[in-house]
Amino acid sequence: VIAYAIILHALAAAALGCTAGYGLGYLVFLDENRKPRDFHGHYFGGLPILGAISGLLLTPGFSGQKEILALTATLAGFVILGMVRDFRKTAFRVLLPYQILLVIFGAFFGIEIVYRTRGLGVILTVCWPVVIMYCLKLASLIFEMPFLLCLGSGITFLLFFADQAATPPVSVILTLGMIVVSASGLFFLLKSRKGFLGDSGLFALGYLLAAISMLGRSKTLLMFGLLVPSMVIFYPFVLISLLIMSSYLGNELYLVDPKERKASYKWYLTRGHLVFFSAVVFFCLNLFALFVRVRMPLSGYLALGIIFLGAIATFIRTFARKSAENPPAMGTRIQILGVPMDVVDSGAAIEQVNAFLQRREGLFHIVTADSLAVFRAFRDKAFGRIVQRASLVVPDGAGLIWSADFLGTPLPARVPGIGLVEDICRAAEQKGWSVFFLGARPGIAEEAVKVLSGRFPGLKVAGMHHGYFYEGSQTEDQVLADIVTAKPDVLLAALGVPKQENFIQRLRLLANGMVAVGVGGSFDVISGNIPRAPQLMQRFALEWLFRLWKEPRRLSRIMRIPWFVLAVIRAKWQEKEFVV
Ligand code: UDP
Image (cartoon, rainbow, N blue to C red; front, side, top):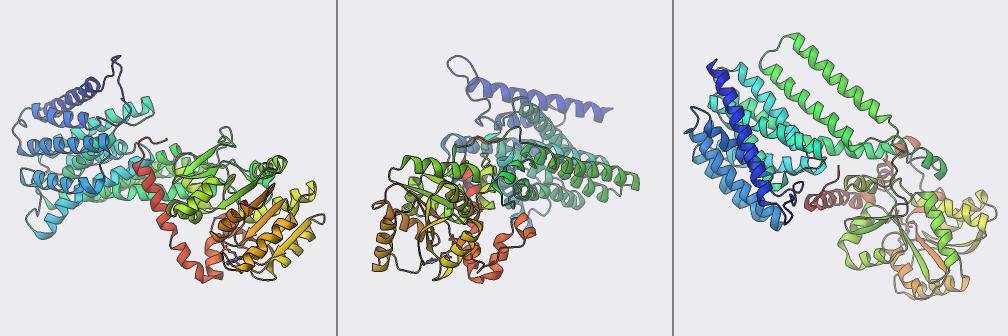
């Protein structure tokens, strides 16, 4: 009875402190109309957490506990540090030394940790909280997940503590505090659909979770304590992989006919479903670890299995959901790493070409950008300016579909360069446009034209030239002059990135009323010189793997893709608002 009374007392004290934290946040951040200035926006997420833990000091028997005192002091430090980051956007690498100092402070002034004095123990003590904090930060980029993760971990801890006689009461009390904080945070999150943890909240929550997992003097407690948050570490990676997978599978990118492609845009997994699914999996894994630890009888595993299967069934069901009710707005322009990208599918791209040709003023440059081209535009200022000036930038690559989705501005579909060449030739046949084919090794353009003329007999070919000349050479001047004389409606330049873009930029000064499209290695594929990947590989967006196998020298290029992915994650990391 006494134990229950203490638990109730601790819950009430934590709730009281937490409310005080929210209240303080409200008061400090009221605007001149006494409306909360930025309740959703990040600025005082740490206060309720600090409030709840200091509230625990009101629990009888715990007011003088050095663990709680040390934790409260350290948490206060983290909240202040997080607020500095929230307000001034101080770089994480500047904050890191202070974070480490704070962790050391907490460890040596009261948070008793097993093996604290031994080599590995010291490293673990210092690194662990920092790693957990940043993993929570990573999870928060996708959704305000930290509350859910901490609630799950907290409940698992409580169940485990109930089974272990060696549990120090202070661990139970602190876990209760964490549960109160996470539950209230989750409540507000679901109500307002926006998170408000901010970096102050993330630092505080991460430190709290790490500290609870390390507290205690028994080895069993420690091992389990480390196991539960390590799932927090894996969680963001699992979720990001799921998101990448869904954006690959979500659009039936392999269909060649643009009409068919448009109609098939319906298998789509929303971020919310993914988050829900992965949270259930996270909790099931937690419980599984607990069951193994406490030697659960078979019935427990059975129940867990049913929950897990239910989650998978939900996942499969949501996969088959139609989401075409809410398609992204066509014709708008989004930014990926500051590089413009037009929200178009192949059909809309062809309509644009038509519109350009009706206007007939200057040169209309269309960039078919894959993730590496976007990355180049992001890194290389001169190339970036060329892409900024382009009349249309279309997404040619699964990596871009993923990143747009990840950044909260989903694109409807890929517009592959090869598909665009075919679509342009089809439209050219119907509307009588003439097309100039420039690029690839000598003879390849001719072969590609042969194939295309077979499919579109009425296609008017204004000229052809191979793409092997140096930039600024006489041959290049000659080719430029040839194109100006031939006056094609559309120039297809297959010289590879960035040569084709630079070439088109030079042509801009000379040509008028022309659409120029950079189409990379399309001629090689259309002419049949490089086979196209099997349907199944295209379906799973593995074309790059197939091309790597055919042309191993592409390896260095593929090695740059992770840097692109990192840059996108970093861009989101630095972003203030996130989109659910
Ligand atoms: N190419 C060219 N001139 C050059 C270099 C390359 O015409 O000086 C051609 C090459 O033959 C190939 C295409 O440009 O057909 C490049 O294709 P890739 O798929 O490698 O380019 P990406 O668009 O992926 O950069």
